[in-house]
Amino acid sequence: MQFGMLRVKELTGGYGAAPVVRSVSFEVEAGTMLGILGPNGSGKSTLLKMMSGLLQADSGTVEIGGRSIAEYSRKAFARQVAVLPQLQADTFSQTAYQTVTLGRYPHQTGLFAGWSDADERAVQKAMDRMGVTEYRDTEIEFMSGGERQRVFVAQALAQEAPVLLLDEPTNHLDIAHQQQLLDTVRRQATENGLTVVSVFHDVNLASLYCDRLLLMDRGEVAAIGTPDEVVDERKMERVYAARVRAGMHPEVPKPQITLLPAKEPEDRQEVIRKADFSVSREYVHLNSRIPMMAVSSAVFGAGAGWYRHFVNRNVGADYSTDDAGTEMRDWLYETGFPLTQTVAMMTAAMTEDAVIGEYGPPDAPIVVCVTAGVGNAVDASLGTDRDAYAGTINTWVIVNGHLPEEALIQGMITATEAKAKAMQTEHVLDPLTGTVATGTSTDSLLIAATQRGNRYPYAGTATELGKAIGRGVFECTAEAIRRYRNRKADFERESR
Image 1 (cartoon, helix red, strand yellow):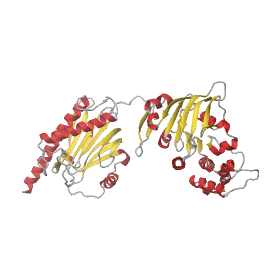
Image 2: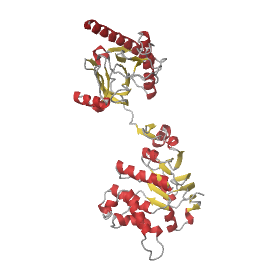
Image 3: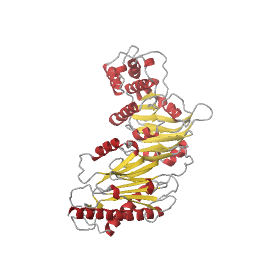
Image 4: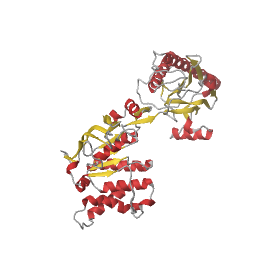
């Protein structure tokens, strides 16, 4: 049996005739971290109390290192298990240092046991790890709730037990100290083989730091497994009775949930139309009356987000910068656009030649806006080394309706296919290869939806939405190319 391994078998118990926890079983291997989740009243803290011996179970067993906890003396058990309960009672005044030294009690032997160098090192190390060394001589009652919590965690770490039980350890802590605490505990598990079981209210923190999760519902196990297996929209909604959306963390492969507010009746539908666009020599601007969900490859605000201002800026053929994103941010700020609500792209094509059209349902159309400069067009199938120029085809597709993420991505595919077809129809060639071009090296594409009114689950070419996007992008791109060529021809005639 692996030292420090914790095994719970058919654990049942509570505070009265009706058990709070019923037939709970699981194992936690040394060096791993298990998070216990569940709504209020689901039995999380009761389960932890039975595991720590603070509450006697009606039936079932808890084993540590292959031995039932009932076989350990109180002091021997404390050398095996360190416990951080949910609430700490301060019965008398003591300093932070004195509080942490209590964690060494299980290691004291004899009636007149002395304080060893090992005890002192363990206390100092634990205080340093939890960032409470500066409060060494501060009395507990004069510390904030978050500072006290960190001191009590340091006390548990100073105990140097192979099993650590934590009941909502991030209570009272700001996000920086939540991170510090959980990073420390996680590191102890990974580097020192500590077995950690912790109760969490925050599903996202539990998913981020734990190897496995136990989801409880009304005293029973609703789910147990890896975060990927447990943090599931249907499971979360069923157990917590709340609307959530699950997605992956942006930096690590762990699922995170977003709480969705209760659905409210929609305000009157705000329909975006061609007339809402303003076009000048400096830029094309759509100022939406409502925030729209957008996905784009823009210079500023790329990716997914909610925006009200959409900008396509003319920068001229001689534009040059080492950091286009920062330069665009500065320009938007100086021009007066709110940075948190704006997505912006740039083009060397004349923005006053923008082509804007309405397609699909007349009462809630799909609006397409395209600017095109194809002097440096590229055949994407021939990956020859070449310089990237600022001449671009920038495409906006504005949908008056609801689009899920799948439809937003499908819409981008449909728009790209339609753009390539327009290049073929207008016989735009790659000047380096002489073959039909598919775009330029700096094209940008944006799909935005009002998320009101009509619902479009898909946007492929076989759907009504896809047909409107395909036709709109094809026609607007073809016309934008013709306008570019006409302007170029006029310039060449005037230059003779």
